[in-house]
Structures are given as C-alpha cells and as structure tokens.
Image (cartoon, rainbow, N blue to C red):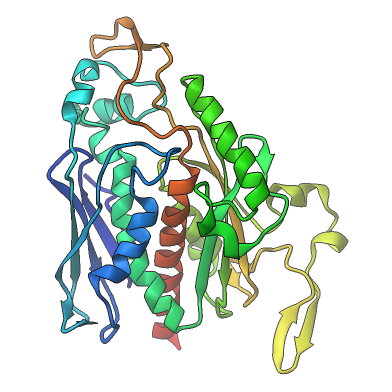
Length: 354
C-alpha cells in the first residue's frame, strides 16, 4: 500500500490499524542531540486522545507513546526513530454487524474497490486513529522548531455556524472545544451536544498560526510551501478544504486592498499587512503563516441511512459504537502536527542548500 510516508529530509511513515494491536510511526531525519523523552510526546497525544471530554468519543485509550529507537540517554541520536502506541481498548465486535455494509461518508467502499479487501474494524487504516501517529511525530517536530524560534498554534475557530468573535491564545486549552473565545466556546459546546441528541454530528473550521517562521522556506513551482502544507493537511481524513491568509475572501478584494506593502522595520523587511498569510510565490515571507481548514461533520452517526452492502444490495444502516459528535477539538493537535512536520522538513531542505 503506497502513501504511508510524508516528507523529504524529515520523513515520517505511519503504520497500524484502528482496532489492531497497535499503531506507530517511524521517523527519518530527526536531528541529533535534541533532548527528548516520552513525556514530551505524551503532552500532545493527550490533547488528541479519545475520551478526554463529554463532547468526544468515549473510547478509552491512554495513547501511551513508547520510544523504541533513536533516543539514547535522553537525546536523539540521529538514527531512525520508532514510536509505538498500543491499542488498549479494541472493540472490533462493535463493527461485526456492518462488516458487509458500506458506511456513508466513510472510505469503506473505496478501499474495498481499490484493494479487494476491507478492514471493517473501525475503518482499519483509514480510521482517524492513525492520526495519533502523526501527533507523536509532530510533537518531536514542534520541539525542534521551537529551538529555531518557530511556534505553531491551532484552535477551533467555528463549530457549525457559531464562530469565535475574538482570538485569545491563552484560553485555547481552558475549554473542551479548544476555542480562542471562552464565551463563544459555551455556545459551540451546546451546538455539539444538540447534534449528539439529534443522533447527528457537526463540523467546523480550525485555524492555525505559525509564528517565527523564517523567510525563504518553500521552493518554486511544484514544491511551494503552501502546496506542501495543503498536501499535509488535506491528507487528514476529515479535512475538506484549506485557505491561506484572506483565502476565498481575496476574490472580493481588489489588488490595492489585498497587496501587502513592504516596509523596513529596523534592518528587517516586513509588511504592513498580512493578507497573503505569510507566503508569497510559495515561499515564506517571515510574517506569521495563517491558514484555515474546513472540518466536516464526522460520518458515523446513529441515524438510519441508506447504503449498499458488498453484494450491492440496497440496505439501511445505523452506525453503532463510540463516535465523536464533532471532531474539531481533537483535530487541533493533528493540524499542528502536520504543519510542524511540513515546516521542519522545509527548514531542513533550506539548510541543505545554503
């Protein structure tokens, strides 16, 4: 199966299935002499793990990271790193009733059509559980980037039609929806709970800001930084769209409004505004990179839906089990992780040519 690896110099390969023995990630290109412990990785895994609040799936997994290689006496060695996360709460029996039925909105049919075989245990390889591997890799990338002065902050900007009215980074981890606005967070939570009571689910928008990104990252034409970030973030199963800076709003702006005037601030080139979102011509400008991703409503709902089975008969389905009514709070650390992996790889590529 192709498509399990991402990156050029800093390269990650994930493995494992949702209800198998475990999942994990192998990392190449981790710089040596970085102080690293399993606790460093666990911080972000705890932000992504299931069962963390009343508005997430109640599947109980500790998502405990085990470093198998690449670290000696508390420092990275430069050798390939392997991280294992064992599945402790597998319940494949939850899916036995639908093993021959294609769930609407899921990858069941497309995987079956492509490979001729399907792991029906929660979607197997297509499950959102695979993103724990990305978060583990991203935690390492974020630590390396922090030493270079780069910080990545993501948050739930909206849930359904409810949008944050202010952006306060200090409150993101102080509410269970990970919103930057405490007052609006309560409205978002109520919207999620309403969807759950309706046996339904709801989507939203996650916004991310990359602070301290140096100028010059990304390469022209096919390897533009925004193109690589789009690849990274669109590879997350629940993401349905991405925009940078003003995004689609730029279509309503004239060039005189959208262009960011260059100015000299001391000895540094900056811009008066940042409508471009920190990237011009596919190369970072040194301003904050600002992007947003559209997160769809989780496909697993308890409402009866129409579908077909493996014999291509029309059938009805009600998806049982433990599922998120809104995935935005748990997607936040996944978004951060994929940005971190991408930016670190771009940084290492830039260092290799200068």
